[in-house]
Image 1 (spheres, rainbow, N blue to C red):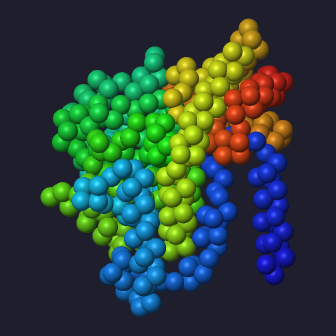
Image 2 (image 1 turned 45 degrees about the vertical axis):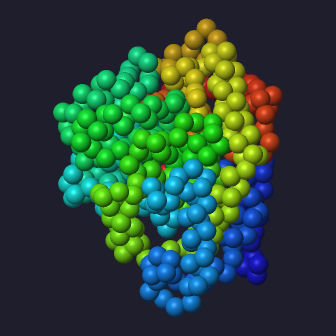
Image 3 (image 1 turned 60 degrees about the vertical axis):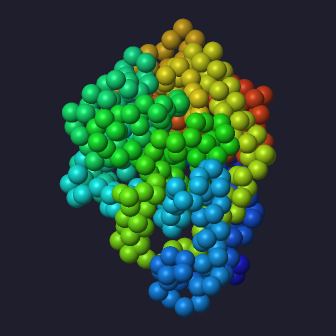
Length: 402
Ligand code: DSN
């Protein structure tokens, strides 16, 4: 590279990524093959439209790339091409979710989504997101005692509100989601069931988390979290007389996007092939073992883990505990300070609201920790024990007056 400033910054970021312990639950480290596809000449090509139906010439090769990505996506999640359709063009998770609503929810219609502070995502209808401006959110939450989903409550709310779409799959919910129950709830309310499995897709692909496909009408996912691909997204839709697939395709292009990023789609295809292998299944299982070890170790040192543990790749730790410091010396550290103190010691996490948080979103009561990135770098349970011990020491040294 001839640009010295950008070259220096890329090298600095590469070094930073190598030096830190990365516990950001939504990040991962891609393979060199994924990087090669992303940085290839494919970025030069305009390919508006879909394979076989482009608005530009010279798309013989890009058609093959997009078709391969589609074929690999369906195969990875064990889907039959006559039953499921997949659109691999969304540029990332937020545009993917926006495309779904644009395609299948009438303007002003109700999106029933988990509130942000209980573990949902902005694009599940939150008022600051376009998805909460063009549609109206019916927010749902978790049970204050169990800190897990209360399916009976959800059923009652859904039947009363009759949303057009029920959105499940969350960014800070560590437990197994009962997809079958959500299907029943959506059907009882006459709603579509959309699962945003962005956080979970690598675990689903690797057999470490139940697949939502037998139950959902629509499944969206980013490709850069546990799935370990480039930053991108996919939308899966059931193929039937409702024509959800056609409506969503039209919403992606020409509704919201222009030319697809073919280099990104090629990189997704590479990642999908990598995930379709026994080594990836072992990786997915190790992610869960690692974060469960992290949870257990922190818990044994007095830190409160939301819902008591995890079945996935992430945990939420209540570092504040309403300002109390318990007998084990844990607590009294707001999430922002916790994240800053950990970063100073080379441990990267994100501050995160906990359910029923009494503190503001910019400085909430907890932190979110995930194991996918460190597991890619070879971390095992013994490494997670060391990381937990470091976190504990750093946070217990934090000033307790705020
Ligand atoms: N998906 C979010 C996260 O979990 O970090 C970012 O939008």
